Image (tube, rainbow, N blue to C red; front, side, top):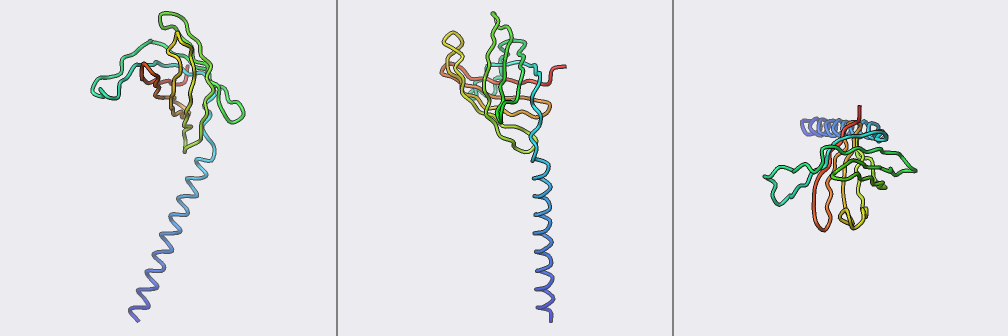
Length: 149
């Protein structure tokens, strides 16, 4: 009799755990089904950063970086512009995927020989922040943007 009760309690406990996990997964799926709306105006800075010297804080390259992000058939087009000793403007196609309440990006862009050539980068955007890391043959760095007001 004790064994039967133990089996019943164990089975009921396992059922509750499985049901709880299934419920939690279902809730997470519904919350992450829609990626955040990242289209619009962004503003921030970009900085040089060497991960091999992590104790040295990133060095701000230019005080202002503006971006306009537009959704295009499952990808996004970001136009970055500012002035860093001279005006610049780059339009970059961003491939991304939804991950919870964020969109994770990756990409490669050739900015031309004058601006360092080919860059690889990864980024993450939520409804309120757009951050990333870039690298090329000559430099590495970060960018950090928030919604423009």
